[in-house]
Length: 288
Image (cartoon, rainbow, N blue to C red; front, side):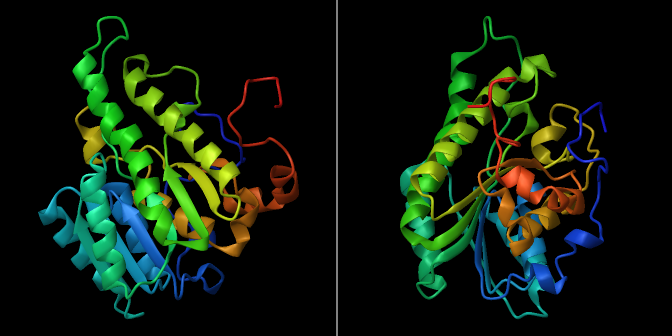
């Protein structure tokens, strides 16, 4: 597990029975689910898992239309048993107008339904290098896609979210761990900024249910350019996210969790987690 410290004794790299999306307890029947960055990798795995859980409508957004078309076909195949509607729209989350148009189109195709579950998974990884002498244009590129992209996602979808909507920010452990891959600082800084934005959003919109998630070390296109070897299957995060949307995980509202952690062990500490500062970003040693 690459030296990571685990909150639970058990550590998972692939799906297991407790997060199986076909479990009746995890049913997403009747839900309208939207996944940004849903054409490939982790985002696609999340959309597939919600299809397996019986969601009524699943919508994916990404920049590349050809990838969206392929992903939508795969999701539709998994959704065939529940006859779910699978939608897709090309959009650049860094461009508010592009995202607004996609949201309008998706909600129209969904018959005006409100979005029950919004998963923000879109993002990029910038070039690596030390802070000193780093390219300003490369840093701005990451901020536009990762930070402004998350901001735009909230702004564009807020008017069409259900009253008790669930919002999941697919983040990174780099947002809170001590510097590890030190030349990836620009990516880590952006992810940390987005975590705080969602923390504040939760406090301002208490009716929504916000959870932030480290999806695992997955061999995605984003990671491949840096030679990151995947240790975890993307289906682990996909199915873990379905579990997060179930009543079993209600106690994780406001929290930051890792997909690798064992859900039964988390459930065993539900009251302790819910009623404390556990699994919140904080200053080490100072609970505030």
